[in-house]
Image (cartoon, rainbow, N blue to C red):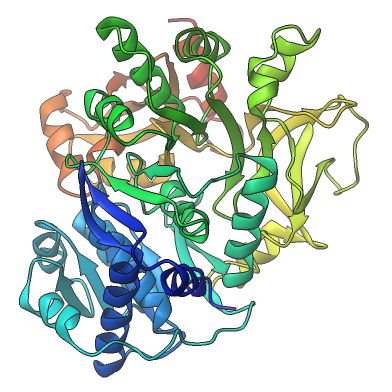
Length: 505
């Protein structure tokens, strides 16, 4: 079953239902949403795109993101969403690795791809090709796909510094959408989802479960996260669902408290993507009330490992309320979750180990990467790389990450990728990048560096060097000069010692 059939179905039974908004304004009802997606699908097919082909989306949050996404699926092709904050070179690498024949872009992003020498054809939604596509004949019906066929190729960074393509099937997306209504938050036809977080990630993955219910889709005019705009749109549209990283929740709470806003019209805020400090969620609930739900997932098991319910977050009368609030909740209905030891066996409750998951939302593997697949999928279980424990009631608490990944503002950053860029600068001879705790961002990126002989530390030059090759949010916030990096007997840098130095000031 093609996930996009959910749009076709709602469009047939209720075509006049308002569907897509830009700010206050409705720019498409469900009939128009379906029709434009079908026209884009027909145009793609006419350009040689066949079922199973990959088509990349390198766009900011805007109404045509939804049109392009569903149009690609209508044609039976696979979407490859790319974070619009990435550098053109990073996006070009993903496009090439995925073998994408087309890339759909928005405002100014086409130029970044062209400068980076991206492969395939670039279709800008402000250009003539896209306008012509939406004027052409529509595809007669949604292209049939098997449940195991690829639908979404999600690129997530790895410890090697190069992104890995997570293969997400139609079955995975459908299972995740169905279980959301049971374990996370039931969506009603009168509700609306607001796209303030990148649609290339969790916010976009949640789109189709809102389509399924005929809910509204609101794109902010800013095309991103703006506290005043979010609260204003919530007041205007009412019954708003918002997916956000913990740092967004913190910023929204601080703004609302300073401005006197109560969150009127905001029905549900689902947070995920990084550590949420207890003090921050308590402050948010104190101000906004009973509006919060937490989920835990990975690209390899999108949005559907565990969920911490609205009741658990708000029920201060529960004797273990604070302990549960510090957890990521219990297993969602579509998966099994286990805490495993080094040999993959289940550990006793309360014992720390690797969080493992299996079920219909777990990926079949990484794109063209059997070695990484074999390391991550073992005996049917996904090894998340996260360390945690489970209590007797099934609540899972994250304790640490077994890998060196840094989560800053909800975005995953892997140190080696930044290190490789910094090491190409002539003033540096050695580099080690680690995360430093940050009340605002969760973690800041900092770099410990050993200078080349005769060189001095030029922070501005290093920042410029990074911005020429990687996204702005990946550059270090601080640089610390050492005469040498601490290493073990095998020459491996001891990042634990570097983190200890940060902790000790």
